Image (cartoon, rainbow, N blue to C red; front, side):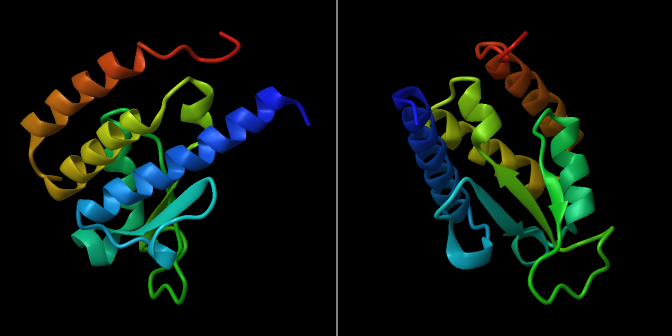
Length: 140
């Protein structure tokens, strides 16, 4: 019930909306067409023809954490689903704001659209690491 938490929760939602909007502008299909809460699910098969497990692995290689995720009526098995889930509470706790969501959304798009390009992956991993170092991890 604290004002601090209310401000944090509002920022979580603002960040999710901005990240969702950025991904849609980048051509990704989000389940429900966007988000009204702290998370979103991307149909990576329809968006970039890569299953959710591989998408999760590609993004993890550059330092962006997501989770593979089944989608409604998913034709793929649970361990190799058609989507990924992304949430904003952890990055909001580190102090990231809406402008930072644009960067993250663009990095996600760049990696998934160029999944076979190792030079893009290496460059993006460095950018993500340098970017992340500007935001402290709570409790550390």
